Length: 224
Length: 224
DNA sequence: CAGCTATTCAATAAAGTTCTTGAATAAAAA
DNA sequence: TTTTTATTCAAGAACTTTATTGAATAGCTG
Image: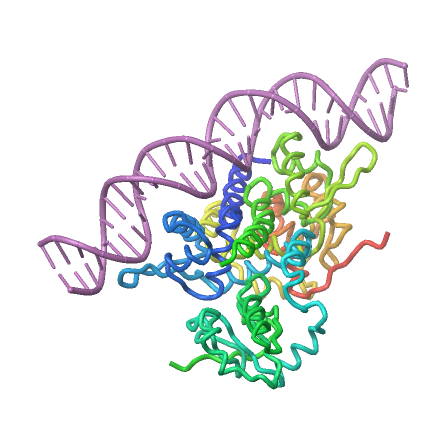
C-alpha cells in the first residue's frame, strides 16, 4: 500500500471521527437531543441539561465545529439549532442502535418507570389508534414554543408548569393521554402523576412529535 | 426536576455515548468499515488498517464492549464481525453525514484522485446504466472471499494482487469498469492505473457492493 | 454613557484515551 | 511434550477531553 493512500485514508477517517467525537459525550448527546426538538438558546439548553452555562457553551462549540449544529446571534441571545435535518436522522439512528444493542437502556427505562404508572398494562397499538381517531383527550405538556412548532392533531397545550392551575380545562369523563418529547423525556410522566392524584383518568404515551412524524402521521403547526 | 429523573437521564445518555465513544476514533472507524464489508481476523484487520496487532485487539475490544462487533474463536484465530446489520446502517449514516456536512471530505477525495484518472469526465448515471445492462466488462478487484460473499452480476473476480499476472483474462475490445469496497477504498484506483498502463480501456466505479445493494440492485452470491 | 445580561474565552486540575512494549495465554503443529 | 502462532493482558508515557473558575466581550436598557 502506497504511503499516499495511507495518508489519504487516515485523513478521511479522521474526518469521519469528527462526527464520532461530537457524539462521544453523554452531555453533548443530551444537548443534541434537545436541539433535534427545535432551536434553543444557550441558557435554556444549560438549564434543561443541568449544566453550567460555560460548560454548555463549550459543548455547543464542539457540535458546531463538527458541523452538526449552527449558531445565530439574536440580540442578547445566541440561538443554536441542528445544521441539517440529516443530523436528527443520525441522532435517531444512534439512539435506536443503542436501544437494540445495549440491554442496559431498556433495563434503566423499566426501572425508572416501574411503579410510576400502569403503562405496561396498556396495549400500545390500540392506544395509538384511539389517539389517532380522537377518541381520547390528547394533552401536550411541553413548553408552548414547542407546541407551536408542531403538535399532534387536536392536542390541548398545557405546559407541565401550569398543569395544576389549569385542571379545569381538562375533561373528567374521558381518558387523557399525555405526551411530551419522546420516550426519554419524563414531562408526561410527571403530568400523569399529577392528573391521577387529582382523580383524572390519565395515561402516558411514549411517542413524541418526532416519533409521530416518523410513523408518517400528520402534525399540526400553528399558523403564525 | 427531581434528582431521580436527572439520574435516569444521565444514565440513559451515558449508554447512548457508549456507541458514540466507540466511533470517536479514526482507527476504530476504519476497522468498523472493514467489518461492515465482512468478517475478518485480528491479524487481517491489523494489516489492512496499518496498526499493530495489540493495538488492533484493543480497539476491537472497545467495539465489542459497545456491542457493535462480536468475536468468535476459530482455531488459532479470532474472527470479528459486526454484531447486527443495523451497525452497518449506522456506520453508513455517519459516513454520509460526514460527507454532506464536512467539506473537507470531498476536498481530500478530490485532491487524492486528482490526476489519477479521468473519472470527472464520466457521466456517472450512464456508467451505472451500462454496468447494470452488462454493456461493459465489470471487474471486482477485492480479495476472493469478499467476492464470494456477494458481488455485482456477471462481475469477473481478479484480486488486485493477481491483476498483473491475469491480464489475459480481460477483454481489449470493451471498456473495463473496476470496482472495490466503495468510494474510500482505493483498490480499484490502483487497478485502473495498472490496466491503463497496459493499454486497456479502464475506468473506476466509486460504488461498491454495499452502495449497489442500497440502490436496491441485485447482488450475486456464490452458492457454496 | 453606565450598568446589565448572555455568551465566550483562557487557564487549570482531574480524568480518560491512545499507542507502545513486553509478558501471558491458548490452540495447533512438530 | 515442546515449539510456533494468534491473540490478549498489563503497565506506562504522551496526549486529549471535561468541568470549573474567573475574566473578557458584545449587545441591550435605562
